[in-house]
Length: 504
Image (cartoon, rainbow, N blue to C red; front, side, top):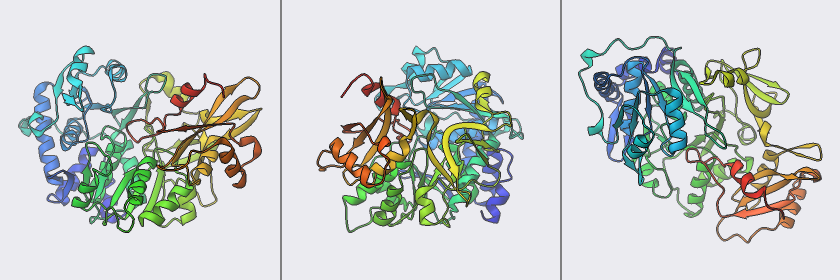
C-alpha cells in the first residue's frame, strides 16, 4: 500500500475517507457508466446535496433507510449521502422479492425505502405497497435524487465504530440474516482488498455485481484509497459488456469464479485476439476456485488471476497477491492482511479482526457465531500452509459422510474441473439408507461436448488419484447449475432438493 493510501486508510468513517480523497484529487473520475462519469469531487459535492434533501424528508443520524437499487451512479450517491448523514442503511439486492424484502423491512423497522420503480420488468414500487413499506421513494435517474442546501446538515459522523450498515446474507431454505457492520469494519475489508491487489491511479476497475452486495462498499473503499475509477454495470453479461470494458479501458475485472469462466468462454470464442486489450488482472472471491481454472485463465486470457476469500460477515479475509507463486495462486485463497487473525479449530476457519462484523440483528445468532475468545465461526473448513496461505477444503455443512467416512465435496469438484468435457461441477451428498449419504456429481458441459457417463467420470477421477470411497455413485448432467443473482454462486440446496427424492 502506498503512502497516500496508507494515510487515507486511517480515516475513521467512510465519509471522512471520501472527503479526504476529494480534497486530494477532486477532478479525477471515480465512477464511469455508459457515457457518464463522476469525479471524486463531484461525489462528495452531490452526495451532500442529496443528504440535505434526505434531511428535509426527515432522515436523521441513526434513521434506518432501506434501499433496493440497481448498480448505478445514483445508487452510490444515495449511499454516500446516507453515510454523510450518519443514517443506518440496509441495502437489499435488487433481485430479492416479497419474502426477503418484507423480512428485511420488518426486522430493521426501516422508516424509508428507496426503490427503482419498474426495473427489469418488475414493479418494485408495487411490491413496496404490498409490503406496507414506510417512506417509499423512487431513485433511478439523477432527477429522482433528493436535493437540498448542505448548509442545513449536521456535522458528519465522527464515530466509525457505530453500527450504520445492515447487509443481508443470502436466504436459502431459511430467512436471511441481518449482518451488522460499522464504517471501520467496511474500511478494513476494503483496505485488505486494496493492499493485496496493489492497484495504481492508472488502473480502471469494474463493478459487475450488485452495488447492494457487501462487495459494493468493499470495492469503493479501494477506489477511494488508490484514486482510480471503476465502470459500473447495471447488468453484466458477455459479450454485451465488452464494449464498455474496451471503451473505458478496463484493466481490472472479475467478481467471482463464475465471472472468470465467462471471460474465459468469451475468449475461447475469439481465438487470436484479446477480448479486452487493456485487461491485466481478474480478481474476485465469493466462491471456490478450481486450480485448473487459474491456469486456464493465465494461459488463455494472458492476464493474472488473484482470488480471495470473503463473506457478508467479513468482506475480505484473504487475497492472492502479485508476488505469490503460481502454485500458491492456483491452490490457495491467499494470505490474510495485517490485523486479521485466523485460527483453525477442529478444521473450521475462525476469524478475529477489525473487518469482522459486529454480529447479527438476532442476538441469539450473534452468540452462536462467536466463540469464547471472540473469534467468528465461518463454517468453512481449511488449513494454513507454512507460508501463511489459507487453503479451503469445504464447508462444515458440505462434508459428505459415506459409511462413516468424511468426504470433501470441494476436492472432487476441483478434480472434475480438469476434465475437458466439464465446464462447471457441483458435488453433493444425497440420503442413502445403507451408506448414510452417497456422492452425486452434477455437471455443466461446454457446448458441443459429448455427454458424459458415470463410468467415464469415475475412470477419470480414478486416474487422477481420487480415493475409491470418494468416487461419485451418481452423475447428473444439467444445462445450467442453479446460481444466485449476485456473484453467481452455485445453490447446492436446490440440487439437493431436486435430486434427494429420486433414486437412480
